[in-house]
Image 1 (tube, helix red, strand yellow):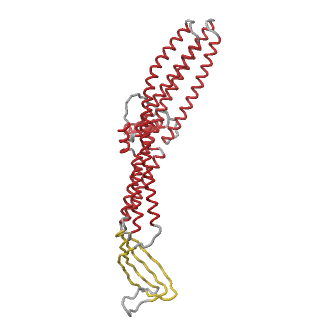
Image 2 (cartoon, helix red, strand yellow):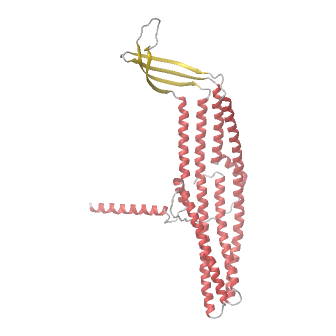
Image 3 (cartoon, helix red, strand yellow):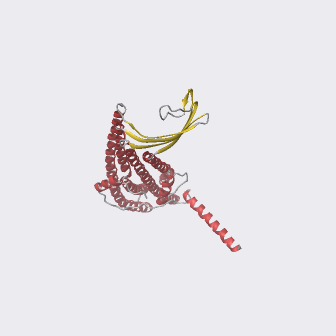
Length: 433
């Protein structure tokens, strides 16, 4: 029994440790992968949560519209006191005697059911269904935008980490140079000016390191906001360079069939067309079935049952509100169609811009890769020349600066290409995660 107890205690302790470790991972104590960042953002991002509530509201509006086809039941009750005694119920034949009283009570069970509404209820249901789909597409697009934004800041942070590493490495190299110059200065093989130049360049690099760390801190804050958290986050991943040639027209066709914001706008436009039919239904008669069963009673304890069943029709003859309402809904539809056309043009622009960014970034990376090799070789040569007394410290520092600029440019270009690929996926309506 004791053995089982000890085993249970160990299991609980291990479970608790695992839970704390998992919590620490999400609070910034362990780097987050891109998939994990997206998972957290889709669960915690406030805009995603708000969009889910919008979908729930649209579902409720659809249920309300659908209820328009169902009969309604209700109970009505009342008490009235009259100046003159009134009959308990109306006379059923000539000369019928009845009960009279000033105080009358009534209670009725009433049923109403629409029979013909001129297409109003049917179109209300259709419009509500389209608007529900629009909200669902909007939720999907919100998720896509969150994934795009999280991925973009994630790759920006990866690139910024590399930039910081490169600046830090340059600081280390310059510190070694400073030490070397100090040794040469002691041996009277270097000038005091070389030492001062190296110190100044080292101070500039340290200031640059502070600036780059501040940039990373801002990026962490942006990522934390997207993830709906307040932790000090760090990321883990690789910047991948995979050159691919994209054709705009097939991607545009794909976007128009799958991009969620376009589908949402189209659904809203179709729903607006239904609203015109709803407005026009006011020109037509409204026919409904109505029935009731009730009790009439007075203060003397007299009581009678009463019931009715019939059909009512409301026929519009003159109504100045209907025509302006129809015109309003038609104008709203034309505006929705123009905004849909605007979105089509924006989709084309988004895709073509992302492809151009990928193409230019790809060529930029290829060029910088060659420049890095050249910058490294130049630095090696200048350092060797200085050690042999055939070069100047200025040339060494310039070569070191050129290498740093080339490396930082390379990492930023890598981040930009990865972000452009994310934007292209977003522009074409790529699936969320």
